[in-house]
Image (cartoon, rainbow, N blue to C red; front, side, top):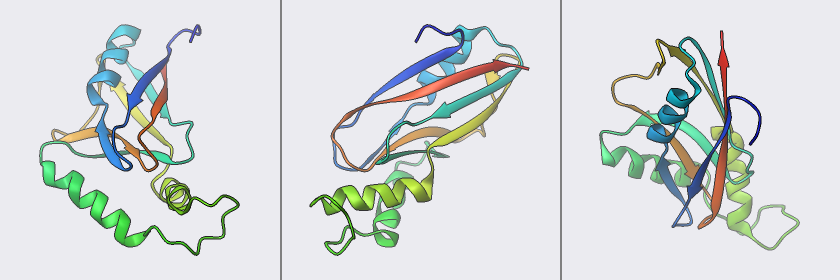
Length: 139
C-alpha cells in the first residue's frame, strides 16, 4: 500500500482452521515505521478469520483454543445460510465472536505486549491466502 505507515501482513493458512503467529511480522513493521510512541492498529478484512492475542509459549494453548471454539460454535448443517457451505457459516460466527481488529500501544519503538503474548491470525475457512492491514500512528 502506498500510504505512509500503512502496511500489509500476508498470511497463508494450510489447514481449514488454524492459528498463525504473526507477532514477528507486526514487530518488524513497527520497526520499519520508525514511530517511537504511538498506536498500531491491525485489521483483518476477511469474514471467516479473526485476530486474537494469547500465549505463544505453550503450544497446547493453540490446540485448546481450536478445541474450545469448535465446542462453542460447532460446524452444523442447520445454519440458515444462503450457500450450501456449513463450515463457512460457522466461520462467520466464529469471526463475529472473536473479532477482526486489535490495537496496540507503541512505546520507545516497541509494541507493548505481555511476556508470553503473541498476535495470532485465526483462520476458520482455509486453506487460503489472506492479509492483515496494519496502520501505525505517531502520537
